[in-house]
Image (cartoon, rainbow, N blue to C red; front, side, top):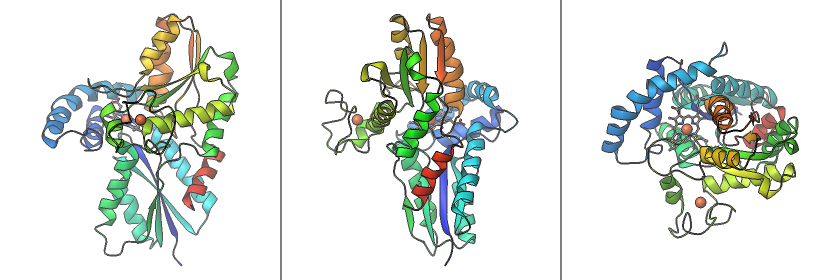
Length: 337
Ligand SMILES: C=CC1=C(C)c2cc3[nH]c(cc4nc(cc5[nH]c(cc1n2)c(C)c5CCC(=O)O)C(CCC(=O)O)=C4C)c(C)c3C=C
Ligand SMILES: [Fe+2]
Ligand SMILES: [Fe+2]
């Protein structure tokens, strides 16, 4: 029997923090029809004419702030996760890492599996909550590639793992050392998403953003809704840590462009909490499985400074899952699922 192929796919990061590499990364990322989901002509004008030229120099400066001797934290942790999973699963498995954008590419990882004569491929998009712009895009790319193969082995996809017990426990455990009860308020700050993309997920057309608190509980109608899955993740972590409902807020960061994104925005929540006299915030970022630009810079530096300027004292990030053995166990269970 051949080996079982396990493909871990995260979002991607530039090859270096230099402007030229950031430009290549943003161009590939934002030209994805699932990310900027408007018609191809408008997307090309917006991305290649406005966002990429203006954003790349700014984003390059941010990447330079988090880039260290290990390179991009997202790629660094993704490589460690891959090596630890390979070690845990042993020789009957071939574990490969890919990034949806830039390197290592999904094509190169799948080619390695093909050369390894794997008998099946289990794809784990490394996003706890399903979104078309992340998980959906990874699925589409993998299917595009394998559909050109003469022999297509059994291919299976993990759709989401927002309520995985080991994932919830790892986030909770990472928070315990900060003593959550000593903070004035807890934030679960998820990566944002355009509202338009949430609405597209609602096949009834009558539920999402139409009913009050539509995303706050998971049900049959919104089971693939990124926001509803995020609220569920937050609820489960809060329950684990005995954090009362009124002591935490789910919010969304990293908005891009002028269209409405999922709300509340983290920056608005910071203003509200500072206005209420809250001084110390503990912030989870459970849309990611590894620390990256969005946690190490946006939360740790930007939000910390923003909150202090508003009269607050401290914004403490809860580290991501990174190389935690419990998360590697969670991956191993998904690998054989
Ligand atoms: C949770 C997974 C992610 C979703 C969903 C997602 C949607 C999404 N993102 C953008 C625009 C940008 N995101 C950027 C960085 C970034 N995004 C994710 C994950 C998701 N994005 C990660 C892990 C990272 C960090 C990568 C790293 O190298 O550390 C960026 C680049 C940084 C910047 O210029 O601000 C952009 C741009 C959109 C438009 C979108 C959904 C429509
Ligand atoms: Fe993003
Ligand atoms: Fe929703």
